[in-house]
Image (spheres, rainbow, N blue to C red):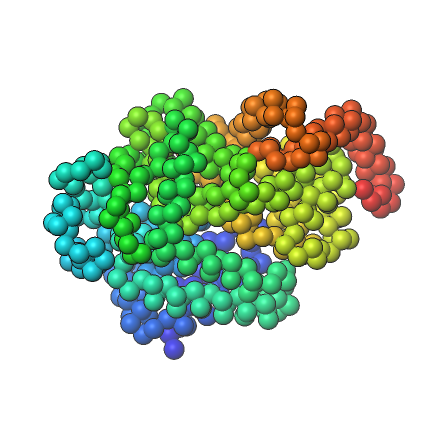
Length: 498
């Protein structure tokens, strides 16, 4: 059995974890050991050869990223973490390599897949134009040209790497085993009991879609319809030459949004705002029953085009945010705006997939997060997601998979937006978008049922009436609660429950 301490031991993992996550060092180390221990001999040999090629002076960060390049599941996790500003700049710099890697799959292997899936390309009037442009965790992208027809003359094939389905399936089974292992080890590791197997099952379901290119083609068509009226957004057009293992789409010129150096500070700010509008606000304010959203918006999937638009690529991983979840999120933020703990708790219950919450813990979590608002915080998306995180950890909130995936998207985009323009923050941009949407809804509200929430904002006319009444007393509520808190602190007495 291979000893992995030199690569993923306590000292290595402890050196890269943010201080606030230091208590997760042991479960991370043991989880990685379980994962690597289930790899095949040939895969382990490839990892060891890659590590040897790095040389004796390689840093821990370089070694971990090289490991991630060779395991699709770790590759995807690395992409998610690549813009996480809680990690060191050195680790983030290396992880960002995973957003778009130089291709290593031989062109002959790509041609073999294309021939098996589509037949002879020359009979389709298509000519492959190697080399490949990039390689990701499960697929490689290679350009082609068309000789005739109404479709664009240039396009790209996204082709699944040979053998990737089987490899990913094995790794995902290991992931489920790790979830069960963590469930059995919560007390030993002193970590929250979160039903990790279910959490990892949600991750597995999401990652399976990475190799479902027929699903991606459907997502691309739906996204094209959703963003058809968004002048600042480009969705690649799906071309006819597709199969379950090949997606053909139009060529989109551009560079990673985080590498848009030639743009002026003003244009970078606008690009960051478009990212927020299209990837956060659009699904959150959708009127669809189930709003589709891009669930893998790392910087490698977002291009700044020469005409200063945002191109959103790689729709293999897409999530759905249900109307009920969106309405419940709105209720939580309304409760935050009016400092109403009952409304916040009711909204959190609306986000629960099973309704089984720890009510005393939920009350405590709600009180703590409302306290931050009384002390000058703002009930925006950052506040909301921090509250949801705490409710998951402490009050046994089990949210729907779509909401948890959307939470991951928000976390990823927070880092991406900061790298595009440090001057732009989602919590400053989203309120203005929300107000514009609300104003656009006013004509329809005149004839809407009093309690209908079938608006993008998720607000009924009844909600608005209650909000107007409660806002007038909110300053007094804040003053009373802050005074009680101060008196409790001065007198050494417990603070009254909120």
